[in-house]
Amino acid sequence: MGRREQIVESILLVVAESGLKGLTHRAVDKHAGLAEGSTANLFPRRDDLIRAIMRRLEARDVASFADADASLVSTPADLASLLAHGLERMLDPDGAALTRVRFTMMLAYPQETAAFHARLLHVLEKVMMRAGLDHDVEERARALAASFDGFLVHALTVDPRPVDTKAAARSFRTLLSD
Image (cartoon, rainbow, N blue to C red; front, side):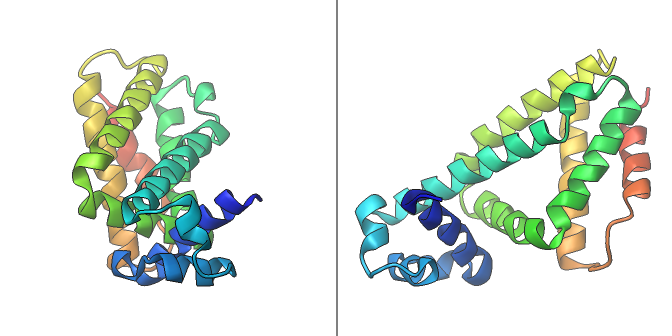
């Protein structure tokens, strides 16, 4: 991992551990084990740190969706299973911290995350059409995304038990049904 990647990973972990209030160049340097000022050399302003988080989260989400073989989705049931598996991955010990960072960024920077969210919805719409859903696709995609986010928020804040992925898949199938 190069220095830039090391710093971006440290930025994410600082926000995961301390929230946006704890995000400082000094905190990132310390977390990365670098000399003070190292982060500022690559990311001079706090806004640069924020943009780095946004880019990394989007890249991870795109890679995660690709890794999950969204291209193999051919039925609504396949899509429901894929989404349920995505919940499981985003709530596993490694994923939960990043999921918290995602929500932190969505709440703190709604305008900046809106374009990213729109791109994700567009991909979801394409997968839905490939799965044979050809009406109300935009509306259904928004409902699926809202349900998906609701499962995540509930699991992170209210109920620490593992998400029942079978129940989640049933919920997603209901949203996908005619």
